[in-house]
Length: 150
Image (tube, rainbow, N blue to C red; front, top):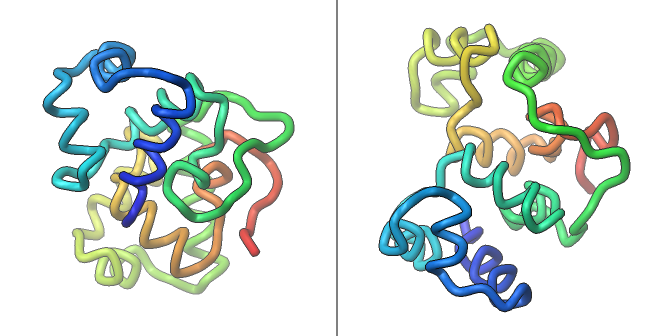
């Protein structure tokens, strides 16, 4: 994942310091710095917050597309995200076990996500989106279209 460069460029384009972005996220500046230099993976909840704050797509922040904004954006929703993850899995004829193997996690983790109890982890979301060209914003319930990226 090379989202760290997009995060840094977006912050700079908005003339914000790392301290200000860290305050927006409710974290320490050093922690945010680790996201920008690629030493740590930014949690999905922080990507959602930054997407909303900067009014840019999560697909853009993850470096999956150059499209900065989509029409008819809503808030990310854990329940919708769970339903869409399950639909995606079934459309691609993947069992929870097979998807878990692709993501190097447990099937119970996939089941937990599909029940809408929490959002899928950033590296898992990125892997699915980049491998299957599906929109992270779509999977997280932020948009209805486009479902698939070009």
